[in-house]
Length: 143
Image (tube, rainbow, N blue to C red; front, side, top):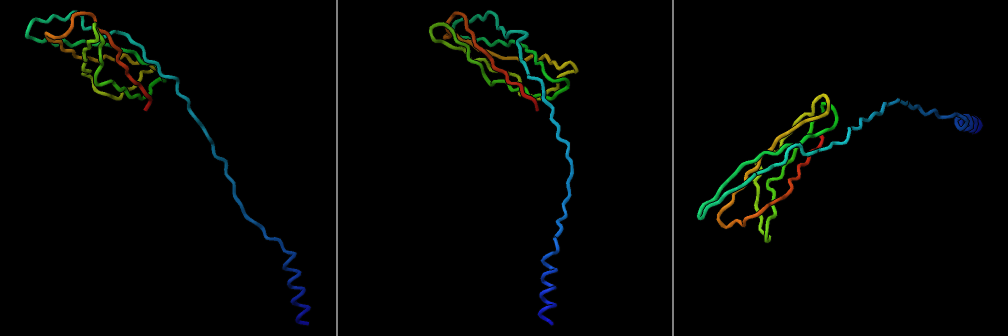
């Protein structure tokens, strides 16, 4: 009899189903794509004419400007080069020291910002006469 009860109990147990409990939730997924940043020159950094006499040097400061366009009211980071090399005649060169520090700014409600920056160049009696030119690369990123 005990064996029969045990057998019936095992059979009943094997017919029972185990219910798994699970929960689900819906999660909203969103993204905001920013407009591409553009940086354009609005004023060249022009040192003009530099005059040097024998045994002396001359230092001159100039200002350049650029415009940033992007997402309205967005925060940006502006990274200026420390120096810019100007190539001149006969493999000569000049170094412009950029005087403006890296900074964070905010684009206006139209997504624009015009920014000035300055640099300084020094020439001396050994500087070759002629025209010098170079390019300052300014990097702007969203923060």
